[in-house]
Each structure stands twice: as C-alpha cells, then as structure tokens.
Length: 474
Image (cartoon, rainbow, N blue to C red; front, side, top):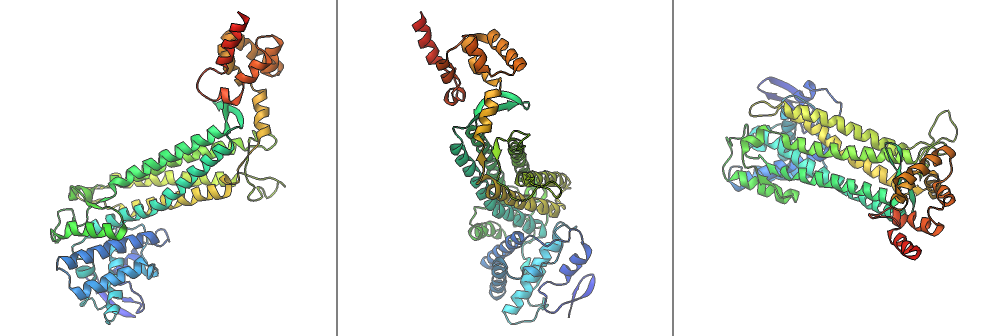
C-alpha cells in the first residue's frame, strides 16, 4: 500500500493501482449502480485530456517532459489499457468531479512510471496542476460526453442504415405480395407487403436524420471555459487550440462554443439527442408491433408473416414459438423512453452557472445509444434477414375482405358499392362473386381493376379500361 493525501486527509491506496486518493473517495461515496464507467467514455475523456496536454504544451504552459508522459499515458488508455483502474460509479454527485479526478490520477501515475518515478509522486506530476491544467471538470467532462455520444452514434447510424437497407430489400422481395391494408385494426384497402416494408424503411431514415441533426450542436464544446465559462486560468490561445487538436484526434470537426458560459451551464443539446433517440424508438416500437400482429397465430391470427423460429416459446405449451426478437426490440425502446425521462429531468435541473446532473445524463444517454444499436442489430440478424411472407394467407384475407370494394367506387358508384358491401358481410360471399352475379362489371374488368398494380398506386383503378368499354358500348 502507499499513502496518499488530499485536503480531507490520508488514505491507503493499493501500490499497484493507478488511481489515487480522490478516486478512492469517490468509489466509497457513490455506490449506486454497481456498474463501471462506459469504455467508450473512458476513451473519449482520455482523448480530451490528450488534446488539453498538447494544447498546453503548444502554449508553453506545460513542461515538455511532463506533457509527453501524459500524452503517452493517454494513448495507452485510448488503446484500451488501464480501464480496470476506473473505479468510480457512473452516477455520482459532484458534476463528474470524481470521474475527472479518476482520469487525472490514472494519467499521472502512469506518466510517472513512464519517466521512471514511483506512483503517487504528485510533487513531480500532479493530477490537479498538470493533468487538469487549464481545465475544470465543468468543461472537460461535458466535452467528453459529447465526444462519446458522437463515437457511439457512429455505431448506431451503421445499425440503422443496415436496418433501412434490409427493409428495402424485403420491399423488393415482397413487391408483388398483395394484402389487406388496415386502419383502426379493421380492413381498409389493399396494399402490397413490399409497400409496407418500404414505409418502415422511410421511418428509419427519418430517425437517422433526426439523430444526425442532433449531433450538429454536440460539435460545439466549452473547453477552455474552465469552472463557469469565464475561462479563468486558461491561456486565450489554448481555447481555440484545444478544439483544433481534439478535432484531429477524434476525426470530427469541433468548434469553440460561441458563448462559453452558456455552453457550460446549459445541457439542452443532450436533451436534443435523447429526444431524437426517443422519437426513433417510438417508430421502431410501431414497426415491431406491426410485425408481431402480422405474424400472429399461426392458425388463429393474421399469419401474414413467417418469422424465423429462434427458441421454444413456452415452458408448458409444446410447439409454441413466440415473436421474441420483435418483443425485445419493443422492450429496449421502452427503456430508451424511460432514459429520456431521466435525461429531461436532469437537463431541467441545472442551476445558475452549472448543471451538476451531467453524470446521470451521460449514464442514460450512453445506455440508450448502446441499447438501440444492439437491439436494431438483433432485429436485423435474428428476424428481418430470414423473414418470409405467407402469400397464400395474404391472398385469402384479401379475397374475403370487403375492403376491395373501395377500388370499384368510380365504376359502380357509392350506392351500389354500399349495397354490395352489406350483402358481402351478411352472406360471407366474396365481393367479386356478388358483382359478377349482378352483371355490374365483367370478369375482364374486375381482373384489371382489382390487380395489385392498379389498386396500390395513385389514380382510379382500371380507368383506362372503363373508358374503352364505355366507348364500345356506345
């Protein structure tokens, strides 16, 4: 063990640990989630610290030997090393100070090793004086949150684009599968299964655009604002330099916020991102529920879709297979909506020059990004790729539906159509059979009017044929 101290007193720290006294206090004080810091966030914060060290070196505020050692230590963390030394809980009081100091201490102790000194020699390289130079938790921490969101969004955008692509592929595969459209859970007018799949893809693309729009504001950072955005203890040249260096390190175009005080005390940009995720989740829930309904049965439900069987569905009912992949997408999206509520409350509860609730914002938004990415990939891999259409069942429902009568309105009029619809409901006879029995239209005319290509596009189904036949009769 080694003895470390802060202004509250001394603590014993394991000699092989790269964290220090302030990390240890944080781990003792905040036993909340039982979870570790997100690995992507550790990397993001290390990148912020590396950018700060490089900027401080360039402005000649940081000694070259110390700067190079801190940069080398940050590189190791960015490469995935030393992550087990981040011991503080993600949810904590102090606006993220324990997390910030955990990073500062790990950086310093590893930097001390790099230059041949023992851990804990903070008189040589200090967590506060050197690793935290020209910084505060209040600018380094939110900047790292923004960077982590951007990094995680890359994975989510790939997943959503893949979902959209696979839905469009199914749209092509099912383009000729005519089925009943439904409104109010009642028969409406015909649609193709391909058109439904393409509509889901359109919704996914809209979600992508929401997310990309929310990411724009997250590229404006408050590094150099230090404690409250006034820039106390930061060299003026450091402020644009650190944004420039971070842009290179992260391969993203970061900018200094127009108003550093505003950027330090307001966190509405995180609410924008969470809202984009929530709204995308709402669309995914609707899609997953449609899949569950279309696959219901198989004998006593709609049975229009054949979902791949992934596991036995019951511990008591033999042969039962449930739509578990659609269900888990639903549940994941419910969690994302719950996370958004926590984020909204935290964003609303900033006071004066700082929002101290950033740890819970970060925790929930990182989870939402991770959960949605995993759930979307699961849906594509375990359901969508092997999805099949039950063409026969789709045709059966269509043939027995009265909804097709709508396509005949321009040809036989509303009164006749209503009469036929009523008779179809009462006798359970197909609409086609009743029309032919009354000699309202010919077999040839019905074949064209009720064809998939005519009923599922704008215009009057069979209009051209009707005009030709009227001319012949005239």
